[in-house]
Image (cartoon, rainbow, N blue to C red; front, side):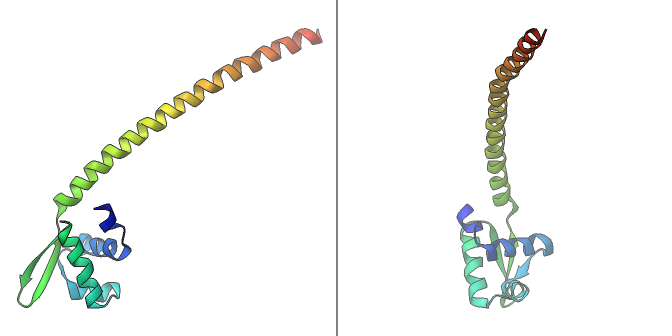
Length: 118
């Protein structure tokens, strides 16, 4: 699904559907300044990926988002990001641990230098 969403035109189509609700392929093509063939190709890929669905209205196909598909992607990304946050927290703790001995050492040096000056 991420490969499908990596295409800027498809992301723009999803944003149009998110903001404006169901739209025809022609409406999206004109708003995004795409020719209809390219728009239809992108919409087909989005439909096959399960991100949008289409229904016929007269002689047009109207597309709308399938929120469940994007919700599942969002859930997966939340898990991925939470794992990344945990790793960053552990790295932060590790770096603080590395700095502690240096701080203690610098404090000891300050005490020693005061003794030498006296």
